[in-house]
Image (cartoon, rainbow, N blue to C red):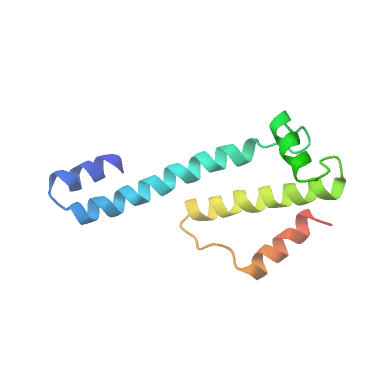
Length: 104
């Protein structure tokens, strides 16, 4: 993709190159966000996670809170996968149906 971007730029197709650069930027962000989200472990929160939760009066030992965070994490990972596959974001109905798998 980057080689194609450079080629478009060299050919003077600046508008197409700009569009491709935007796409590349979105893909890089999605990849980095996916790695970050996949590595969050709410069962073993870091000190900064605990400090943030304490500041917001969130009990990270509460099972329902952990289940909710896990559901949000899995939904976010699913949305990143959908983006990577070129699919549209989930509808509200799809999100609601998926959440029933993770939050009881």
